[in-house]
Image 1 (spheres, one colour):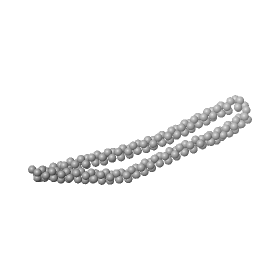
Image 2 (image 1 turned 90 degrees about the horizontal axis):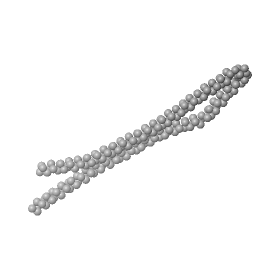
Image 3 (image 1 turned 45 degrees about the vertical axis):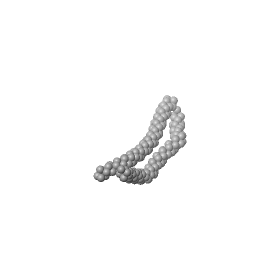
Length: 195
């Protein structure tokens, strides 16, 4: 009798162990897939942010290159104007020098105004792109948060489903085990009666 109980306990433990192992492996793979998905999302989002950061730095470097070119051009212009005003012919003609200074100042003023007009569309385009990228980054981040919250809600449903499926599986294995015991008992009893 004791041997039969040990055999039954071993059978129960073996079947429960099998079912638990099966479901534990399933839950572990489910958890690994969830972590992998989040890691991928983080990697994509971080790459996205790095691209936006790179674009902003690139635009800054192009802007500073333009400023440096502008500064160099102004220095060249000043040098040329000073060369013209330092000539002996210019010194002899003081009246023309005054006119030359006036024309030079007017030319500088017109050049600055033209430069401002030319830069307005460029500056507004750069500003628009910066705002667009910032908006895109915020939208991507909020979508990531939203999708994770939504997925977390579904994960709870999935976890409950897995829990219920595990329970049902245990019950089914237990039912089969119990019925097979009854069948074995019935068969043994029938053999004893027939003998």
